[in-house]
Length: 171
Image (cartoon, rainbow, N blue to C red; front, side):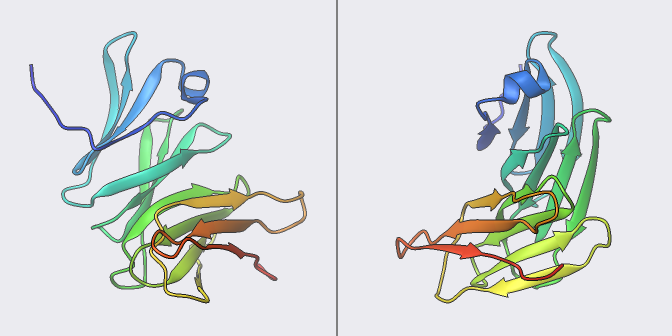
């Protein structure tokens, strides 16, 4: 059979509960949803050099992930088996991780711009938060707050051993 080098496989603790034996494989040029038990392939998003990177599964079984070389963010809906992508307006942002807050904001961290992005998925509006130090962020942890509160996010700097909390004051 065909051999593929999988660079990043999303194996979160609850992936089997959420996807019922399905695995999301993130490769350099594609993202696949596979059912290991039934040997079935549900969907593929061709990235063609987009460089898919880390991701997180939300409460509605959607995988949100970064596309490093494609300078975009993407979402795979596990129920509808469909993909959606958003091009980042900042050139050379190179996102490395993305996470949805289960409300309306998609957060992303990157390696090249010393900033954190937040996108309103309802309106497509982007907000960029400049970090207080030079950073190389490869992971993001969204902190979901109360029902009427805005989410914030924790990011880390890969090279300086620092963490930063971004807390928006307005929508």
